[in-house]
Each structure stands twice: as C-alpha cells, then as structure tokens.
Image (cartoon, rainbow, N blue to C red; front, side, top):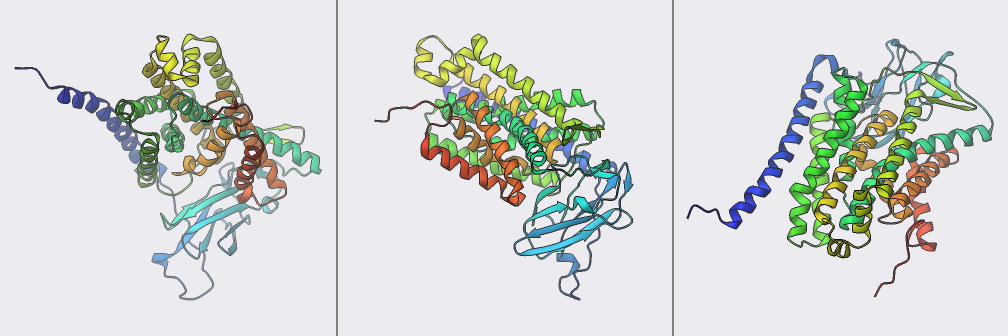
Amino acid sequence: MGHSSPTATRSRTLARPAVLLVSLLASAIAVLSLVLASPAHAQTTPSPTPSGSPGAVDVATQFTIGGIIQSEGEPVEGVEISVEGSGFSEVGTTGADGRWSVAVPGPGTYTAELNVESLPDGVAPRDPDNVTREVTVGTTNTVNVLFPTGEGTVATGSIWDTLFSRFIYGLNFGLLLALAAIGISLIFGTTGVNNFAHGEMLTFGAIIFYVFTSLGWNLLLAVLLTVALSAALGWTQDAVLFKPLRKRGVGLVQVLIVTIGLSIVLRYLYLYFFDGGTRNIDTGITDNVTIGPVTITLTSLISMGVSVVMLAAVAYFLTRTRIGKATRAVSDNASLAAASGINVDRVIRIVWVLAGALTGLSGVLYGLYRGVTWDMGFAILLLLFAAVTLGGLGSAFGALVGSLIIGIITEMSTIVIPPDLRYAVALIVLIGVLLFRPQGVLGRKERIG
C-alpha cells in the first residue's frame, strides 16, 4: 500500500526524457519561428517574369525560382542564372535592383547555375565552388536562391589548375562530411543501428546556427551553443527512443523503421517553420584567399581547419582515453565488453552525445558551405552512408577515409559531367569498390556462418 507499481515507475522513467525531447524541439522551433517571422529577417519574394504565353499559367499557381545578386551591398544588373530540370531550360537575368526570377512549369527538382562569365568586371563569386544549386519546387510556390558575390576577378587557367582547384574544394567537402560520417559509424559500431534520422541531426545544427547568427550573436558563442544543443538532441534521442527499444529487445529492422519515421517527422517540422527556400549564413567574413590557382573563401579555410582539429580530437579520444577505448571494445564485441565490467549503456549514451555534437558541427560547416535548407541533411544522407560503407562499417577511421574519397571524387567529377550528377558518380565508385573489397577500405574480413 502506498507503493507504485513497476509499470507506473517505468512509465514515469520514460516520460521524463520524452518531455525533455519535446521541450528541446519546441524551444528551438519557437525561437526559429520568431526569427523568421520578424520583419528584419523576412525575405522578399522576387516578382516572376512573364512566361511569354498569355494566360498560360495563373499567377496564383505560378511556380518560380528567383533571388537577388548583390556585391558589397549594391545590386548587380545583367547577371545571368540558368535554370534547368525535367526537360525545362530558361535563363533569368538580374534587373537594376539585382533581382532575377524564372517561372518553372511545375513542381520538381531544378538546377540553378550562376553564369560566372556574365558578372561585370571586378565582381566574382565569394565561393567559386558554390555557383550551382539544386532546388526543389513544390512545397512552396517560390524558392529563393542566393549566390553571394563580392569584389574580385574570375580566375581562368589550365586543366591542371582546374584539377587542383577541384581537389581543394573536394577536400573541404570531404572533411565536413567526415564529421557527420564518424557519428554514423560510432552509432552503428556500438548499437548496430543505421540511423536514417542522422541527416536531420545535421540539418538541426545548421538551422540553429542560422537562427543564432540572425539574432546577431557572437559567432564563437553561436557555434558552442549549437554544438551543445546538438549533443543534447543526440542524448535525448537515445534516452527517449533507442535505449527503451534496446531494453525491450526490439529487432534492428523495427529500429530502422523507427529512425525512418523520426527522419520524416523532423524533416517536415523543419519545412513547416523554415519553408523551402535557401538561406545563407551571414558571418561577416567576406574575404577570399588565393592559393596558387585556387580562390577559396576565408570561411572555407577556417571550416577546413576546424574539421581537422575536431577529427584529431576524436582520434585522440578513441585511442588515448579510457572511455574511447571502452567505446572501441563495445564496438568490437558488446557482450564481451559487458562481461569485462564495461557499462555498455553508458558508453552508448556517450557515443550518441558525441555523434550529435559532431553532426551538429558538420551542419554548421555545411550551412556555411552550401547555405541552409530544410532538407539539406537528407540530400547528402546517402553520401554519408556511402562514406561509412566505403571506409568500413563501424570503423571511425574508415569513415574519415571514405568521406575524403567521396568528397574529392564528387567535386573532381564535375570537370567532365554536369554538377547535378556528381553524387551519382560517388555511389557508382562505392559499388565498384564493394565488388572487389566488400568489407570496405579499412574494414576487416569476417566469417559468416
């Protein structure tokens, strides 16, 4: 009498982290909605250009892709942006106010590309590697695409200069992929779970960082708080969903379906509050750095440096600390690790926190690299899984190697193929490698049966 039943105790235990997860997401969404609703951050929708066919499409149902081109805060006139997709092709040109708009035939995926040669003398892209954007139309009628430009010149050179430039851009892309891919690898190694909601963890980091910078916060403080919130999201996911599922002995297929459902829920929450446009993160850093034939933004160089430092820290953690060694032991054989006195649940919880922090930081860097969209994590999720599989399932160092291979190949392939096909090339390379080395680059052969 006066004692609660085990079932009630268990329910309260599960309710506490559930409330924490809901509170965390609700707080982030509330701040996001306030920022996006404020006049200071409202986006102006470009006026669609006439389609040329009188009465062809009613304005109320018109789908458009547009944006504004500015240099040092001043509009740039006469710049051309080509929009292609689903058999459609049209070129938009900026007017005196710097705005451009292209009316597209309907919902679908399109590629918007800045025609660098149309930029006036003395103006160049801030990030020469960021002149092509993939745009999805349908969730909203109008999608805005931004191409940051500033003072500079458009570089031209030999094929070797182009190869070296693409290699550097690919290295940058591969390093930021590695941060998220290592998170996937650590989770899979310790739990056997392929987390299909991992892309949404990356998107979470990018959106939260965008919100903080929109509020005018210090960049370092914004990064630290974003990483902390991303780590909290990882902790809460394990506490609310995955630890209870482990305790109940739920199979990996059922857990996989749960991660897919979580991915869909989070992704469309982002869409509801963030809409379908692309937003650039304003860091206030607009300088370009020239290294031989390569022109790269100072932001990208800082991003590469941060990635290298964090990857070195993860390597030290896994090889030199007690918790890191315990993580590797759990990844090798969880049952044997538990028999040796290692608290497996505690290690898994730490892995989720670390994976959340690394993936959130990857989202920050990817947002600086490509801009922030509601589905940015989902768009590169297959690349992340390809990097993990290519390097060797469950191997953190393999994920790093696989990410660098994927990043470099995707960027260098654009020399000979259209940019919107580069991700397909990476997946083809993955298939080719696995045909000859199924365990991946750094994976180990295992006997089955």
